[in-house]
Image 1: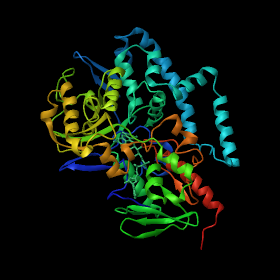
Image 2 (image 1 turned 135 degrees about the vertical axis):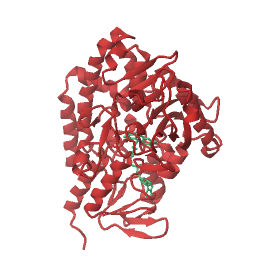
Image 3 (image 1 turned 180 degrees about the vertical axis):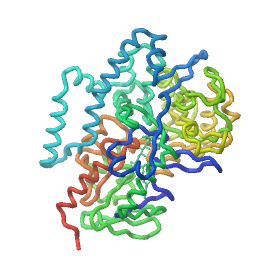
Image 4 (image 1 turned 135 degrees about the horizontal axis):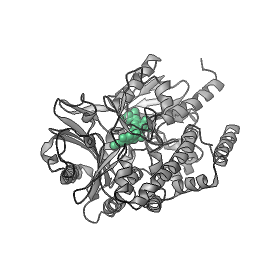
Length: 509
Ligand SMILES: Cc1cc2nc3c(=O)[nH]c(=O)nc-3n(C[C@H](O)[C@H](O)[C@H](O)COP(=O)(O)OP(=O)(O)OC[C@H]3O[C@@H](n4cnc5c(N)ncnc54)[C@H](O)[C@@H]3O)c2cc1C
């Protein structure tokens, strides 16, 4: 088996790189919580050195007026109770409702969705039956919850449960991560659910940090691949998938080299990138071509890595000495209304070429959990920022630095030493995410996680079983079920289907 990677390093959006001399950080994805325990086990990631540490608590939200809200650990109950006794009472029922839904979701994630194409095969009927059986096992209340989670907006869902604004913001953040939408957009409750199905070190719903950054995960995967005889070629950009006689036969590289695939071509790129740019257009039927053109991509995400001379000194939690809130996900954005304003600002482009004047920023200072990332005394932070328009007027090259400064100012308003502590920064606009990582429209999930692009419809009806538009072509990345995040699950499911086909078809001589 041979892996062809365009960049100089494997790992895609889960890599650790030096962005300023002496300062390393996870370049794109920055926190681990969805990585599947079965993938950790199968690929022996722990044996290859992967270690994940947990945050002391999940989120810290500086609030207007000098207060702060802490979610997770022992904080949630008391923090909510002092704002709303009713919400504190409801929290356990909300957690139980999510846990029931997550249990179903986890099982569905590991299945190949029924392929609702023209000719359903026996495995498709069996898969449909298994899904029906899964749902029949739920009582009526759980079915109603599931329906709401799959169709409603996160805002409507959370408003029906709670009144405490910072609580709803802390929970609702998951609904807008990588989702260029209002928290009141139908379907955003699913995005929230998608961010809570995981676990860290056996703790459900937790998020943590991979020592060495996200690249530690993919480097461990690469080591296991190499141990099993996989050849990994970096700086090997695929320009075209070679199709002959209606079958994928290999790849033509940008430098002119050709790689022959004896048995299968497996694409781990965004389906839109695969079908619009890498596969000859004539290999697609007209309907598939039209629908892939309409496949929704675009995350509204702006991502920065920042080298810091000292820790942020929050007005609501003073001090530059390391404190637990520095080790949590620090969220600038205190209400669902704030999130909605940020989206509508970027979407309308009424005030600038296409970004929120008051963006939502999650700040994760990885060096507070992993001192190998920055020189002694200094720190590295990830800024994960929503919302920016995937396409701004005048193009992102003209506006990247203006928006980077806006993000720094946004954190500075909560921690007034932040701007002066910045030694260096790097910034990735949606255009940079597309150019550098192949993330079309800057979509961090290889396509929006909407009901129209999930399960049997990911990436399209008729291609949900990881088999692509032509024979011998398979898809295995986030554009396939169960979607985005550093999970390893699409690849694991795809491998199962590919092996099934290869066992049926003898190895060619
Ligand atoms: C800014 C950002 C923040 C995120 N934060 C988190 C997070 O904290 N936690 C989390 O779980 N998930 C996060 N995600 C999502 C997660 O990183 C992605 O869903 C996941 O990495 C996708 O993995 P993948 O293997 O499907 O594809 P990718 O990681 O996108 O890998 C695709 C690979 O294909 C290569 N490629 C593209 N075109 C070609 C070509 N023509 N020839 C050869 N190679 C090519 C690319 O260089 C890339 O290496 C984030 C993503 C981004 C972008």
